[in-house]
Length: 142
Image 1 (cartoon, rainbow, N blue to C red):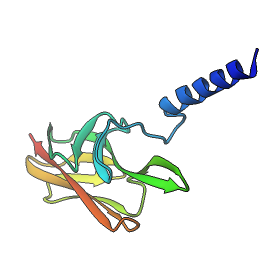
Image 2: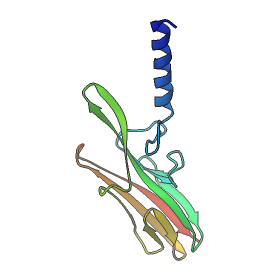
Image 3: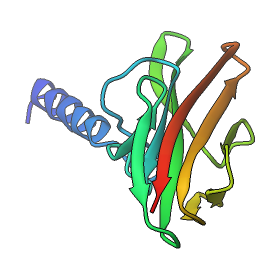
Image 4: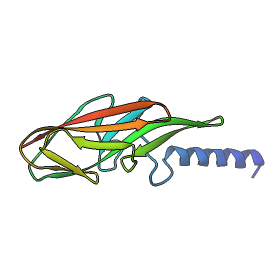
């Protein structure tokens, strides 16, 4: 095989690997704004419940639980290489808190405690970009 064919195949392989996400802990989010914060169902980056661009609304039954993850996306540059990077709610800079006492969140699990309306606030402080972003998920507990 010629060097040109080998180089072309290697380039194609690297492109395909990069476009597939490449491994655990790497998110491939739909297009959106830089400095975007999303609250997603489970750990599925495409199951967006709320984002910094759009407030979310869900209904839960009393006693029901829902696993969620907060994902913050930003662009970073090292030298001439730019890439998307993600911070999840395991970071000390992300916090989730309910406004009222209708739901509780602990270790990424929302639990509906009693009937009524509550709002889950998700905040992230990006000290490097001097940016604070937030999103809200309005939860009606039946």
